[in-house]
Length: 366
Image 1: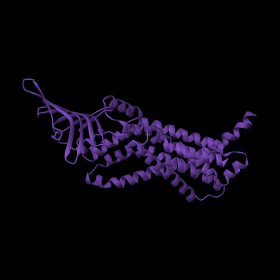
Image 2: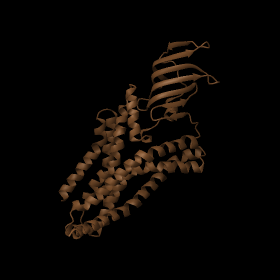
Image 3: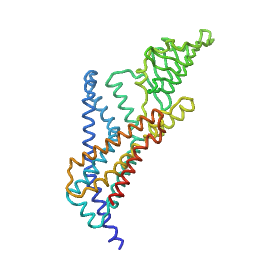
Image 4: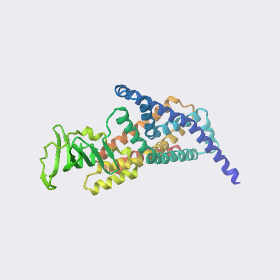
């Protein structure tokens, strides 16, 4: 009896998954190809102007593909769900399944299970492959293509930079406030002998240059004595501009969830406001599960179409759903970065909204 009971369900589930994967794999390949082509033409002028070697350009795009995959995965899952189920509807197979007693819920279980696995795989991919590859393509872009000298040495918690006056140690670069926090400048002479140490609590980039806060210089005399002097906030302390330091700044996508969390804890312990990173931290968990959430909307939406749906109409529906999701995500992300919304709400609001929409479509479809 168990065989009679479960075998049809396994057969149906396997068939639905094969149909989905048969559409999903080509769609992912097509999306990546389009992404690469658009990015190539966007960067063509830089490649030509810099006389970039062909292998350097190739390595740049190869290292960027892992990040592309994470970005195109939610729309690829959404499109594949709608198209695969739409094709089943065109062949009247959805009607046949419903007529044989297979409910919309039973149809959805294997597809949503697969979407959940894709989301979990995307999360693992983001934590392992993407940070390394992102750092590598940034290196190829700055050093091998743009021919810029590598001046920075980065860790998850601080930055070392070789500047015009010596070596800079920077705790944090806040791109939103255009401010450096926890700057220590080790000034050296031509023989790399240390003669002055300048400590700056924060330095903000302004049209007039750097505006320092709590800047103190300690000068080492020839006899080893140390002279301490408090510096004027408007006194020129660094020849470099903000753009120079941004070239060695590590973006959140270059860090794993664990590394970004350690960075936030370290900055907080040093008294540096790291609240702008909290949204990025929560987004690292929320965005990978967009694939599952959008599948929750796509499956009942496609299942409601009973006869001969238009492929163009299916793609239009997918475009509208995907556009609405990313608009809400961008809006809440912006509100979270500005402090209007809590970080957790800003990152997960779009997922919650579309998950509830999917649940409503399931209930009304049944």
